[in-house]
Amino acid sequence: MSRKIIVLDTTLRDGEQVPGAKLNVHQKIEFAQQLKRLNADIIEAGFPASSAGDFQSVQEIARTVGDTISITALARAVKNDIDAVYESIRLAQNPFIHIVLGTSNIHVEKKFNRSKDAVMQMGVDAVKYAKTLLPHVQYSTEDASRSDFEYLWQTIEAVVKAGATIINVPDTVGYAVPEEFGELIRKINERLKNVNPDVILSVHCHNDLGLATANTLSAIKNGADKVECTINGLGERAGNTSLEEVVMGLKVRENYYGCHTGIHAKELLRTSRLLTHLTGLDVQVNKAITGENAFAHSSGIHQDGLLKDKRVYEIMSPEEVGAESMELILTARSGRHAFKNAVEKMGFAVEDAEDFEQLFAKFLTLADAKKEVYDHDVFYLVTQHRTIDTSDSRLYELESFQVVTGDLCPTATVRLKKGGVTFTDSAVGDGPIDALYSAIKALAGLEVQLKDYKINSLSRGKEAIGRVNIRIEYQGKTYSGRAMDTDIIKASAMAFLNGINAALLDTSHEAVVTAES
Ligand code: KIV
Ligand code: ZN
Image (tube, rainbow, N blue to C red):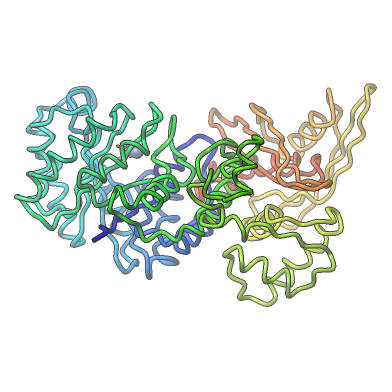
């Protein structure tokens, strides 16, 4: 009988640690709702002790999607962190606390500067404390793949006896290789079954050597029942195990692994695209499963074979991961019904009639500008519409702008609105964007420095949407902002303002992470 593998998605915790990938609370909820449609078993929603904004996001996710999906969040092995996790997830139906503590010599000696026994005791005490709050506790032996096996095992045995119900074995620095990691999991599994067969054995891999998926699959083959992954493999450095690769690996090779997941594979592409839109981080074109070219065949021999029978060169169909329903082409004449259908087909809820009317008005404006509106554009419209909080009086809004460019004296005039008041100013610059940003900086009165400016085309069609990502430095900290529009100058202005708004939110100490739109 095929074994069910539990899938934990940690895009909103480990994935979000990527510089520039920070999402605001609305974006996190939007993504969590998509993870629910994807049917992930568990969402790791954040690291609540890290900031007030993270705490609030975890709490909102637990409240909004925690009715049917299990929610967890990360804590170090200290009371304050554990309390923060408990307080933020307790509204979910099936919450559990995730505690992490290193087991490798380098972690014990360099990070904690304590004896191995003392570190193990910290872990045991943390589990015992967490168990007074919730019945389920996951314990992660950080840097397990570089740990001395006997100490790793002693730690696992001790925390299981203290009440841990899930043991997670991380390859924190992406050092493991598949045969060796599989063997590690086999050995732990064998011993664990004798200590407490009900404890779930889990793995968490990083991709520094490009082996995260291979290591995760090898662990499954050797007894792991739960895997931790991120969409698009998002994560620090080379990233985490890519959820879509593990899910499709098990699906396509179920005969080999004898395992399956509960993931709705048809939602994979949509989830990947949503993440790309929200974070502004593109997937490489040849990325397995979710890359633009993952199902494209260009060689003549392959095309010929495919025409005869798809199975000649196709091990899975694009439809299986949701490709067929991605292609939406709407026009200004499509009407409310078709647009509503398109929005719902992408997985967004349309409940509030007034909100839908506002969205539809934006669709008509976009359709007039672009003529053909694709799935990317619908994503853009909905996510943009739902993530801008224009009611916050601390934030700037772009009211209008004018840019005159040329090789004599590029000039920009900008009108901004904040708390119901409008401000106008003009500036000259080396080029149109420089002039635009100088005018915005003068209006905001902030000493911000532009560190990075990127622009690319988001969708297809003659009037493609331009997406601008910027990074600014303000008071020694880096903030990112992004925006999309068919007018790239407008997108540039909005991206810069979003960066400034993120800085303002942060420095006013009521941060909801960043204000990227
Ligand atoms: O990589 C790691 O070790 C982690 C743990 C918190 C599971 O992310
Ligand atoms: Zn990790």
